[in-house]
Length: 290
Image 1 (cartoon, rainbow, N blue to C red):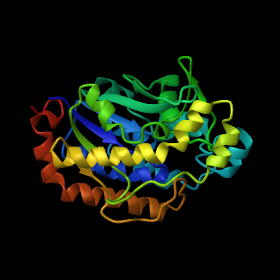
Image 2 (image 1 turned 45 degrees about the horizontal axis):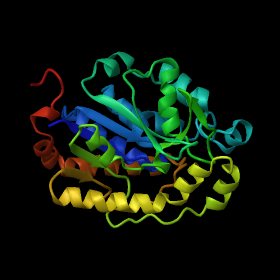
Image 3 (image 1 turned 120 degrees about the horizontal axis):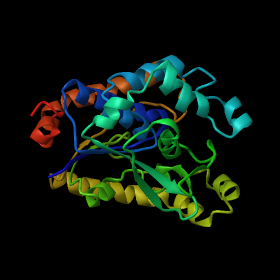
Image 4 (image 1 turned 90 degrees about the vertical axis):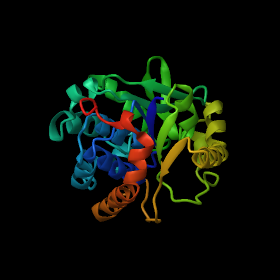
């Protein structure tokens, strides 16, 4: 049975997932596939490239850097997160991404985006992230109202979390039946209607399907949580979620709060490590360990 890892996003809250993934790297636990959404896609690619600590390292170093994220960038360019800095200067020069290891990895890497014209999710397999291929990760993490639409392969794309925040069922349909699911909200969380919908309706009035998907996001998300609970009870998936609530915004810039969320991910993963090993089984070991 093919194993998978599903990583939820949530802006800077997603650094929780990086903490969990780093614990898996430390114990040489891998999977046949990983699918990430938004920040989950960003942290997931460093997992596939085997770069433990990379996500927290550059977030702590650059979270207050206006080239990385700022309202000035949003006003000037339409993107809160600087495209050239985040997706080129950072992975190519400042904290290099290991493309060779990523491309040689046994783990198939997927990102989830939302098609703005149809309002439907797009699940894209990325065998490489060299050059402009990194734009698939950027599209997955391009939050509505904080990012410009990303055009790739004839599609207009934005944040995957709008259409499918936790793509467990989609990954199962792709053949990854046994999934470790990393959530970034604590148990009992239920999503509420988006208070920014009036703004979204105005800005995206040319894309009614996208607006409808955004308006229904909380309903879809909560149904996904119900399905995840069912699969968890039946032993089909293993879920790691924050054991406590930490106040952290999607655009958090305080290094101490970012590190706190990351450390919680590590702590929760370490507590569940024996369960993770048992669940992932022999197929969870990295190539060369079998």
